[in-house]
Image: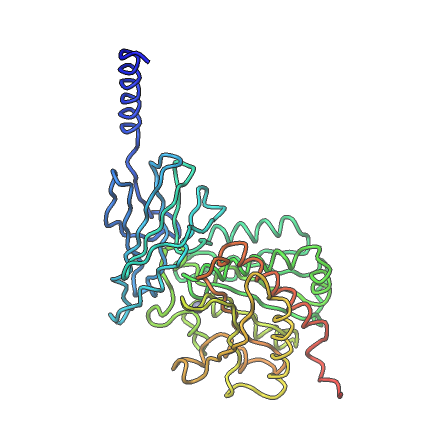
Length: 419
Ligand SMILES: [Zn+2]
């Protein structure tokens, strides 16, 4: 190559590089949308790094949730996202452990619909840093796959439009006036007051978005053509509430331990939260009709859990028969929940030592306020594993459906057969 040619080549190359540098847009971080939560600490436009803190107000629950949008991304470039969780506080001013806000793998999406997991992040003290090369100009990052009020609304609408036996309804309006969407699966035509009733709800704790994904997996399975789902629908009506604490999900707050108490410490004679009040009323009515057989409350547990598990009845609320039914249910769930998330053998309970408001926990209220054969139970699905993504969660939901269907092959209202 001649000297002139190399010179021209170098010149063209450098112009190209300068040009591409100039065309890199500024990264802009925003959380001003439903479910969003981030306090932007620093955006380095040269290094393409973003540093945020979760922005939830501790009065509205543990501020472990975060979710934000980044615009100005050059498709294919590497972004570094760091979450500083060193300042997390509870409503009483006490520190909240950073680990609640720092999943090993965060969630990201380029369309707010399909959510992928990042590669494992690098923890440094109470910070964690994740690197992502999104192939789009806009990308969203979150603690876990978000599931916000519009997702709940669209899900119940879509299923009710697609299936004649699915009816959407409004459980209630919240204290802030938001709709709490719900649905019931029940055969078209005359009401039959001898049918069983199953109740599945998620998100009494707003930040635990995985619960809603487990719930979605369950309900999509329950209305499907799977023979066990068909068999379940032949005998049982299915009530489903995708998000109980709509207000805190909408505002990006954590919900857990909010002031004066959260949804899952509210199942008392005078519930504060409208969704709890409405759920209690319906459950009471179903039980009076001797139809209720299953109450399922979906949650995400602490950061160190690596397997899903059930919270079972504490000894104070257990009887021989209740225990036998609960054992039978967990046994079939254990057979179904093997892959990718295996049901843990450990079954803790929420008795007086767990919380001073233990009686106001939903499943404990169900255990004490309804008939002995009603299973009231909490499923905690781990959020800090390589399978704690939308697919993994929804698979747990399907498997839960299979467990419920198999358990209800025998009507638990009839007294147990002598062996
Ligand atoms: Zn919870």
